[in-house]
Length: 193
Image (cartoon, rainbow, N blue to C red):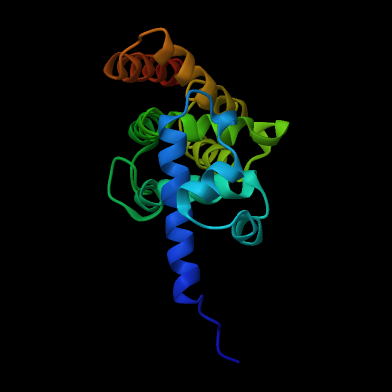
């Protein structure tokens, strides 16, 4: 049986919905203020279209986040150093954290919406599990590091969306945040061996 391809209007609707959601999250004051009705209106589709395609607001946010994250995910899974899989751990860990920080700075409100939507723990989210697993397995290759699992959680805490938003709201510049994260990570990794 041949795999069914999405209809062209469904593909157009999907693109319009993701673009509308992206625009709304980018210009919102608070991510929780963006509703499914707002997104449907901005995209020029019915709310039913959103619910059929994404299930709920959290599903739509996850789909948009995943689409935005795809280039970074590909660089990490298949790309060259410093993000790619062939990179030594002491180089890869800081590069991974810097890439996550830059992504969250570029998509602050979307990252906040994803990490806070539905009241469930951000630690149970698929994207968090993926980053944690990647960091843990990379950290386990660092000589002298005692606990890669905890270390991965601790390092990911430094790039949580709510912390990034707080620091940005306090006026901490992007490059200053990146420099502080790099210094913190270097000290952490240096203490491990």
